[in-house]
Image 1 (cartoon, rainbow, N blue to C red):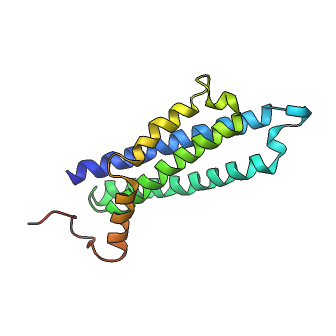
Image 2 (cartoon, rainbow, N blue to C red):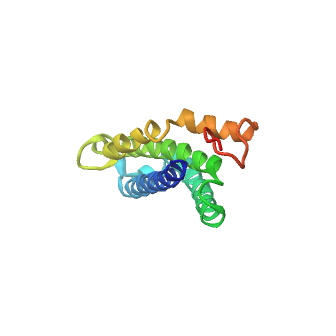
Image 3 (spheres, rainbow, N blue to C red):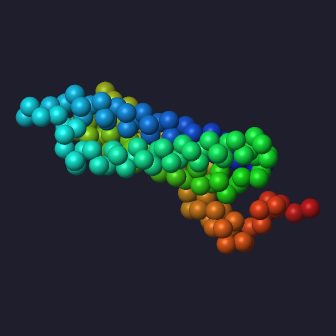
Length: 159
């Protein structure tokens, strides 16, 4: 069962990262094109900085996802449970933050059904609850970090 959860959670994290990147990319494009009062939105630091932070978090998460997936392929899907949990809760949060920011950058249009951002937010918000809520994911990471869960054992599995 844990094998299934780890593989599903890493896929879910990759999906959330992809959706987050979509939101960031569309927001950057829109901010460059939209020119209220003759000046592009992109020229405002209040627009730039939140998107820079999201892009930076996305790049860091992408590296952790690749490393975790590679390690799962190389050493087995049960060897990276702490990293899978890290990827899962961080990606799901990032996606919700990126969708929220996209709605903000796009204004009223961003919240309408004419853009996918509110749907992305609703869809990926549920990932913060299902497959083990983010608090459960953080608890798993803490278990490995503080030694409550040994790296060579499965939580809840006995011989």
